Every structure is written in C-alpha cells, then in structure tokens.
Amino acid sequence: MEQRPEGTDALPREESESPPAPPVVISRRTWATWVFFFACIGIFVGINLEDGDKKYTWAVLERFGFFPATVIWEGAWWGAVTSAFVHINLIHAFFNLYWLWNLGRLMEDEIGSWRFLVFYLGAAIVSSTAQLAVSDQTGIGASGAVYALFGFMWRTRLVYPKFQSIMVPQTIKTFFIWLVACFVLTAADMMKIANGAHVAGLIYGAVVAECFVIRRPRIPYAVGATALAALSLVPLWWAPWSNTWQGVKAQGALNAGKEEVAIVRLSIIIERDPKNAWAYRTRGRLYQEMGESEKAAADFQRAQELSASAKEKE
Image (cartoon, rainbow, N blue to C red):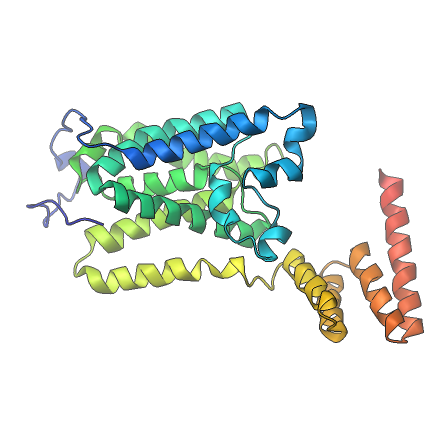
C-alpha cells in the first residue's frame, strides 16, 4: 500500500475530531474497478442468456468460472478467483456491484490502480478459500471482496480523508448489521449465504489496512500479513477436515492403484458420516478386489440399506 499522507502520523483519537469530509472527486482513471465491474456484468448476462434451467447446471457454471469443491481439489485452483465474479440472481448482483462501484473507485483512486488490483484479487482468493474451508464450496459472487473493501476503508478512513465521504456511520452500521443478519438467515435456513467469505473478506481488508497503512514500522507487520494471506491458500490443496476433500483424495488414490490409501480415506469418511452410501460402496469394491469377501459383503449390504432408505424419503 502507498505511503501515509504527510501529517497523519498522529491520527485523531475520536472520529468526531476528524475534519469535515471534502467533496469526492475521482482524480484518476479507475480502470481496475471498471474491469472487475464489467466482468461481473458480462458473466451475469452470459449465464442468464442460457436456456431455461440450464443456467443452473454445473456445466454452465463451470464454463463461467464457478466450480464445485471436487473440481477445485482436483486441480482447478483458479476457481477461488473466478467464483468472485459469478452472479446468478439479479438482486445479489445489483447490491454487490453497487458497493463494488462506489467503494472500489474511491479506494482505487486513493491507493492506485495496481495496488487496488492486487488487493482485490487477494480478497477474492482469501474469501473464497475461507468459504471453501468451512462449507466445501467457494461461495459465489463478489460479496467477500466487497467486505474486504469495506474493511480496508473503514480502518483507514482517518488516513485517507476521501473515504470519510462514504464511511459514514450509516454505511458502517449497514455492513455490520447485514453481516450478523446473514448468519441469522443462514441458521434459520431461509437463505444460503457465504458467511465465511464475508467474515474472511472483512478481516483481510482490516488486516491489510493495519499492517500496510496504519502500523509503524510497517515491515514486520507486512511480513506477518503476507504470511497470513499465504496460509489462507492451504484449503485449496489440503483440507483433511472435509469429507469431500477426503473423497477426492480417496478417488485419486484409487485411480493411482493405491488401494490401501483409498481404504483409509474412505474409512475416515464412514467414521464421520455413517450414512455415506458412496463410501461404503466404494470401499466394498476395494475389499472385493483385495479378496476380503466378508468385509466387502458387509459394506455392500450397508450401502444398499442406505440407498433404499434415501429413496423412501424422496
């Protein structure tokens, strides 16, 4: 991030002591925000031009950059970035793009386009990997990155006076109230919201602000922030707490002819989720190939019982 403006080493202790916010004037070409904004619009239009319900199939969503966790863990790591540009619902797209436009252009104007580009892509990755870690999916849309913009501008509003024009109490309350409301809506099973992405984005933005702008000396804080960001990449390749990840690794071991490794992975899944018919069935086939007929028969029987039970509930 760029140097703190001259004369801001001793920041006002209270927000009320800060000078009145000057009129907002965008003084440079905010091309990065334009690119992100119109990328989201283009993808939204492309998805919704698909015929009927086809727009909601994985074949279409993957083509536009939103991948299931299994595909990401099989190697499509770039899905952590591209998913932040994918929207399906008009209301979801409208509010995300509204805040991206209003926060993004102002922030880019203050810190510079290339710094903003790096910040935004980092926010997309961190928010997506956090959501992947807690829910076996990256989440969809720009809201995690938008919360990162908010987090950064909220923490640096006394450093960059222009931010005070939008970081007013009403805006700050809106973001925090919506953050809490999303948890309530998710818990009530009224909406499926990527709360992990929201929280991770907010933390990312605030941490970057603290370590690269507010704290002095900056170097040790910057190193810590960079290490934390690197750590956030771990769920892209290693997530042993996830049954979906264990399943991907079990299938990979199976394809590589490592039957014993696959059995270990499948057994972990079964221990955590005793109603996973796929894991029983797959392990049963492996036991059968290894000559463990009794174990194979037991797994096949259990898989059949679970499948029958699932059909009765449909």
